[in-house]
Image (cartoon, rainbow, N blue to C red; front, top):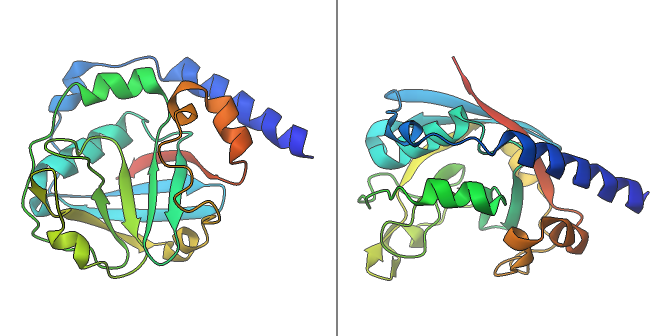
Length: 207
């Protein structure tokens, strides 16, 4: 059973690499509508995120671009900490490099990190680019937390349907997956280490 599960992951990874090699710099200049909804289909069920652009315009634009161009398809929830956050992204290093070359300016926190809200993760100035998290609790500390010259994590969207799905994501690994180089350099090995990670089958915009 375990071998079959890992086999499925390898098939998913090969398909993912095949259709995500395409990148167009023009995508990074697309502006999001003032309001839009993205739907995520995961192996645990579906959830929807409603985005309000004025809360963090540059973040909303990047999220819109990523969803529209299938960046999160076959992505993973690689960091789920009970009572804190569910963090997700892609593990295709070459694709990530293309997107990260286009920086997003930092913005002030207008809307905080209440339960169900979504924000970009960051590691310093202009690093809100590809990794996002959904708050599993009211995390007011993230509204003002200073780090590497930047203060707070601006939320720009909220889970409006399927929060129960988000709360069911596997959290047994918690922080142990962080800083594991295999996440980006050898995904097959990474999935063997953490076989219970939950997969995003696809994400897309809802008209």
